[in-house]
Length: 395
Image (tube, rainbow, N blue to C red):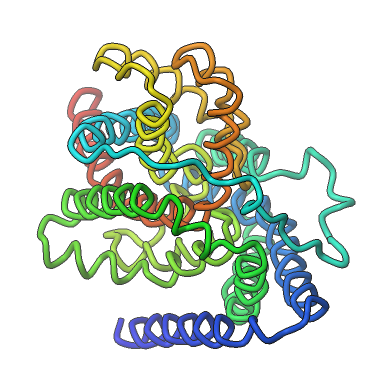
C-alpha cells in the first residue's frame, strides 16, 4: 500500500510538472512545433482508443464471471443506479442555479479559434464496429456466458489476452501519460481557451464550484466521513489532471481505474464498473449543462422553468445520455432536439451553448472522471445492500 501511494504521488507530480513546463514554453514555440506536439498526443490517444475495447471487454467479462449467478442482477442494478445518479445531479443543479444565477454576455464569434490540425491520425482506418460501446456489449455477453455456462471454460482461454492488455496499459501507456498531455495543452493555448474563459468566467466558475461541491458530497456518501472524502478525492487527482488535459474520459480510463482502486473495498470492482459506466454516467456534463441552461435562458430573456417542467426535461435528458458518444461537444449534438422541443432554445442559443461546451470541455471531462470514481465507491456500497436483499429473499 505504501509503495502504491508513492507511485501515485510520483505520477501526480510528474503530471503537474509537465503541465507547468508546457504552459510556460508553448507561447514561444512556432506553429509547426505546436502541431508536432499535438500530433504526438493524438497518436497516443488513437493507440489507447484502439486498445480500449479489449481492455473494457475483458475487465467487464471477468468481473461478471466473479459474480457468477448474480451477474444479471449487477447489470440491472448498474442501469438503475446510473439513471438515478444522473437525474439527482440535474435536480441539484436546478436548486444551485436558483441560488447563484447570473446573466452574462455571449462569446464573440471572433474569439472562437479552430483547434490545431494533426499531421496524421491513427484512427482513420478503425472500423465503426471497433468501439468502446461494442467492447462493453461483448464484455457483458462473455461475462454472462462465463458466469452461467462454466463448461465453456472461456475464462481460461481469455486469461492470457487479458493479462497482455492489462500489461499494455499498466506498464506502457502509464509511462506515456506526461507526453500524452503536452500536445493537448499546446492546442488549448492555440485555441485561446484561457482568454475566452474571461468572457464567461463568472458563470463558469460558479458552475465549477457547484460541481466540486457535488463531487465532494458524492465522496462523503461513498466513504463516510469528510476526512476520508478529502483523501479519496486526492487519490483521484492524477486521473482528474489527465482528463483535464486530454479531454477524453475513455483515454483516461485505465488511470481512473487504478486511482479508484485506492478508495474501493474490492480493487477488482472498479475494473468492471468504470468501463461500463464511463459513457453514460457523466455528472460533470449534467451539472455544467444544467447550470448553463439556466444562464442561457436568463441571458436571452426566457421565462424560468418550474420544477415540474425541469423534471420532465431531466427524464428525457438522462435517457438520451445512454446514447452519448464520449467526444468533444457530443452532449450538444445528441441533445439538440431536447433543447429545441422542450426548452424552446433558438439556433443562436444552441450555437452559443455549443461554443461554451467546447470551451470548457476539459472542466466537464475532468468532472466526469472525478464523479465517476466517487460514484463507483457509492455503487459498491449500494451493490452490497442489493446483494444482501437478494440473498435473503432467494436463499
